[in-house]
Amino acid sequence: MKEHKDQRVNSIIEAAINEFVEKGYAGASMEGIAKRAELSKGGLYHHFSSKAEILFMVNQRFLEPVMELAGKIEVAHSVVAGLNRYIHDYFHYWSCHQRELNLYFLTMSESFSNPQIMELYRESTQTIFEYFGRLFQKGQAEGVLKPCNTYARAVALVSCLDGYLGYLLIDPQLDTEDIEKEIQQIFIKALLVSNNNDF
Image (cartoon, rainbow, N blue to C red; front, side, top):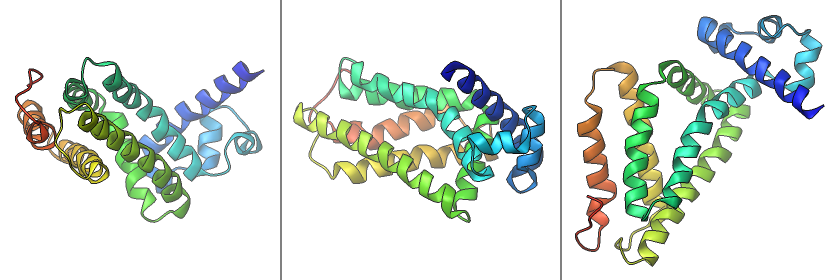
């Protein structure tokens, strides 16, 4: 039964992706999503309470691979190596997923005028900030990173990465490799207690 429900939700999400890509958030409708998913409107409301909730779920689905990349930081041979690898993989993932990137920013933009999406967004970003804050704390505890406000450092790193993605939408020809090195320099290498082989 759960497998059937999961398949139905996946079908709705894929239908919603196509609806949002073609029509934007304002032009998309629950009726249009239901039609694409071959459901009645009531059937759609059985799974999702609103268009905003569906958009957020689409965004979360796209972020699953990114969260998997973040999870790999903790299994790297050091926090520093893991953070460096994450920055590299993060840029690579988004530069290869233009459709997902467009919807990521559509969700972010919509959150500013939609309290329901904003609340969902606030919860997920808080989780991300806390996760990276703990990683910086771990680096300090291991004696490889200098003391800093770990939460503020985490917010700054995530904000910088997301800001770069916005400019990548504007100019897909940006040199990702050079920007990646600068971000690693500013957010990680500058915090190293001493020279580290991970750089």
